Image (cartoon, rainbow, N blue to C red; front, side):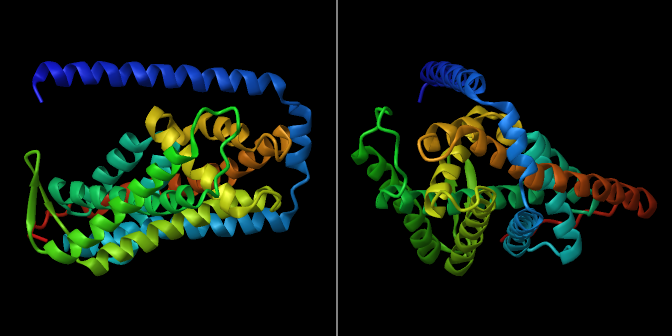
Length: 321
């Protein structure tokens, strides 16, 4: 692709992003005006302790899955950090990523904390890339299956034909299958793509990546399902969550603020009152974003203090793998 064509597509992409942001903002204003906020607060006050504890347990499980991404990345990159250190860095990084955005949280915090632990920048990049790819691999499998099976019911006023959804679903599942096949056939080889070198893991590792990420997305949907008191079918909640996940990734809004709410209300408006949907999502944000942040902040400062006391570690040289 020529530089002129690349610049043209960049402008087109930015224009499409602006249009998407305007549409999301319009949806938010429209829904905000139609919501009875007093009833939202009343719904929040009605949550039982058992529901909140169940949601908190599921949130903890989700973060264990997140930490497992980095543990699998440790094996993939063959670094020797101990499990407690990896899990601490991963927990802080994922919490910050969810609350502040992937660049600051998933990138900045992971780079700083892993550097303190002695990893080289190149190895940290590989850990981050492996973990990010793991997360979206599971997304592709679950979203593909949901779109192929027609579980997700698109509102009738949305101009999206069913065949298009099934086509997208088939493409997502095919992508995951192609990755598994490539790992089975080309493990151990270094592949070059647009000037970058990729080292494929074993098929066993690829399947582990898929299982971890599918489990994580499924648990996150379980949190919202519980907070909606099971009134919306779990599979449908999962489908809407996946749809909101890609929407939030496209607009790069930290914590997906507004995007998550807009998608859930637009998709489930006919099945559940808006104020109850919003109350469930606010409770979800408190359990899944704010509460872990209260744990991650002192953990981060503790890691920083430990680094100052012990001093910087010498980075181990990178090895292929």
